Every structure is written in C-alpha cells, then in structure tokens.
Image (cartoon, one colour):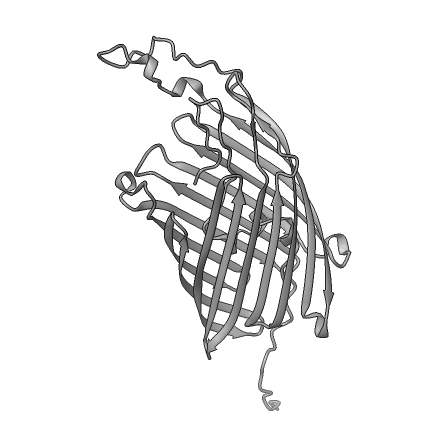
Length: 331
C-alpha cells in the first residue's frame, strides 16, 4: 500500500492517502461519518497491512482506532480517535497520523430503523524520510556505485508536519439483525496541505473523496450475503472496489452471535483479494490477501499484500436466562 508516493527526481511529486482492502472492517478510515455509528457503547479497531515484500522493502502500516456511541451519556453524540503509522520503501518514508473527531447521529422512522450520522475530524500528520538510504545515477562512476559521490539532489528538509481536516456522512437502515444497509461519504484533506522535501516547489496533498455501500441480507436459514462496493478519487488517482462476503451463522441466541465469513473482492486494474473472517460475540477478526494483477506483475509475480484486522465492541448485554428445575424438599 502506497502511503505517500514521492517522485524524487522530478520537479513535481504526487501524494496519496493510505487505503485498506478491508474497508468494511476499518470504519474510522472510511470517514468521520462512521464515528459512533455502531450498535454498542465503545468500539476498538486494530489493523496491520504489509505490501510489496516480493518487490522491494516491504511497506507496512499499523493503525488503531477507538470511538464511543452516545458519548458522555449524550444520546446521538459520537467521539473517536484514529492513529496510524505507515513505513514505505527504500527512503524509509515514515508517516504518522493522529486525529480526533466527533459526530452526531439522528434516528428516525418506525422503530428508529433509519440513522443519519454527520462527523468531523481534526488531526496532524508527520512525514519523514532518510535521504542517506537512497541511491542515485550520479553516484555511478562508470564502473560501480560509489556512495562517496554527490547525489546531485538537494533536500530542503527530511521531515514535515501538516494539519488535516476531514468531514463525512453515513446513512444506516436496519430492518432486523440480518437485513441492513450502510452507505457513507467522506471528504479528506479539506485544507489541501503542502508537502515538500526537495529544494523546489512544494506538493499539494489533493482532497480525497470516498464513498461506500454495504448490504447485508439472508439467503438461507444460516447464510447471509454481504455485497459491497467502494469508490475513491484523489487527484489523478482513482480506486474502485467491489465484492461480497458470505456469512455462515453458527450461533445466534441470547445476544451471542458467532459466524465465519468468506469473500472475494476486486480492486479495478490493481488486484483481486480473498477474505476470511470470524465473528465471535463482540469480536470480529479479518484476514485478506491481495493478488496483484497490475502492470507490476513481472516483478511482484502476483504477490501483493496481507492485511489483518480486529474489532472489539463493548456493549451492555441482557442477562442470559437460566432454566432450572425445582426439586422436592427433603424431609
């Protein structure tokens, strides 16, 4: 996964936000409209992704998020925090982001089946790289690479920090525990911050627009189908994901829900990926693997990325009924 692409030898560079294959398991990465948009009290989300190990120094991303619904006892108020660190490529490009956000949810319709959430996030991103880890054509003396030769590149700085502002909205419609719809829109980098490492013009981080739709409905007594899609656009970059998961329900009683999931997804002109998941009461675990199909196949040999996710939701549970049989008194 490319966090920030830097074409270091040109007069211009292009910058791109991080993204995840399991967008359905990374709610706080999809936009502020999903802050507090869940059934429960508190939600915690961890993510690990590694990509391009077969091509170069692996790109690695760690992320963690937490949010609360009806925060501080205020019905409709959501609060959340989102943190990630991304390391990319030969330059040891390091990106660390922290943001805090809030949202407001309004329920309406019969039995409050409809919910509309609007959210806002403020944060900061710190970028750094190691120029000494890079090699250049100017350091080839005609026979071999000589690190003592000058690179010909002038780095104005090796780190920078910029503020971030994001907004989002999400709509949810829940018919019952197995039939639901979620749709969301997010707008990122509203202030279009400037990024610069070389002694030249800075690069503007383009605004990013993201939208997704996720359905869930039963197709058999113990099977649910979960089709979904996501579209993102940032500057000249676009991404379109489409796929579906199949959920096999093993247990659904007394507020205990246990299921296994399998899915297949496709990211246009880039990769297909397979997904396996486990839902165990308040926990959701996900594992996916990207199979590269882009022009990089000769180098990647179809090997793309592995991604692990975990979600924990804390909620108040009704007491499980205890069935007992009275025994006759002994005299």
